[in-house]
Length: 430
Image 1 (cartoon, rainbow, N blue to C red):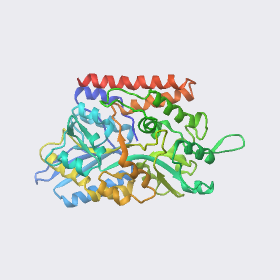
Image 2: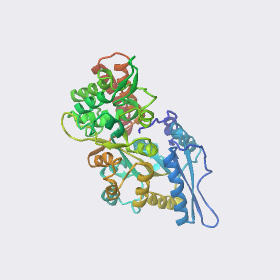
Image 3: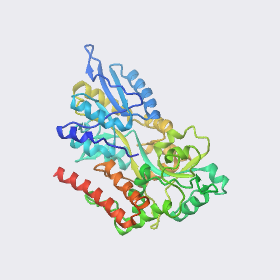
Image 4: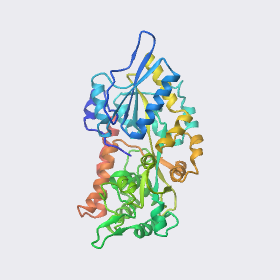
């Protein structure tokens, strides 16, 4: 779930601040403090995601019961406002002590000077790398860990078992060819040709762009980035093969349409999309689904190798956390990353435990299995600007489907836009 980073952040970053907040109803605490009685108040900011914010309320209450000298005030903001709110708070010398952020935003947060490295006495790097999944290394910059996740996400194929059963299809597709054939069999149109049910939801702007970049390109033998993360390689011959196959799901095979029932999440939950590539975080929103569904590994491409993308939201310490507030914030972060909290997080939200020992408890759950299996071979993309990176891919798709451009021209233009982001980032870091 890659998200939209507000443009206003960069202006604040130049001055040394950065990034923004959380929540379904907007509340902004007055700030961390130490009371005369020795009690400490810290702030925690997150973006608004109902199942997540509900669980955090419970966890904070439990943490405070165990640590009566610490009060945790929270603020949560609608996703699209998150970074704007943080930027405004930072410029005013306010904001959270502990912040929840998408790992793809880490370069901007670190380069802005907003985050501080995790204290190694409390979070030894060797212990982190022993106890967490390897993808946690995406939380490291310049040799230091800045954030840690409670949970992680992978991509998998969600499929509606009831629609499969009604169509006489026993198993989810295991290859690209099977995905096309199964999608065609599950697509329904009325007499006028209007789409009534999509076999596979083609959605470049949801998780589709991640599927293309991190999975489809690799499945043709290509690489999305050079080993040093400085060169974008989508438009290699392998990347072009992957791009054309992907776009042809809509352009040629017509198994879905961008915008059908607004988006893939709405269509799948309504039982009108038989299959969708989505993240494990979606499971929390499907707890009340009126049909049976499961997850499966992403179908294999030409090279026969399994791949998926991993991502995560993580918690980190801001520069604001000093003295007693920092000590309390470290305690809070250690609480949020302990195994029992990860287990509860998975049950309530669907995101996967960041520790293998906890993930093993869910390996046979049919709704989680496809996601958990992918943790063994997942890759976490390096982003310099996650939003613009996504836009480069979605614009390339639109150039073919709406603009009528040929696949190579569209992909070359997308790659050029993405490479400009990387060139700018690495130039500024010299």
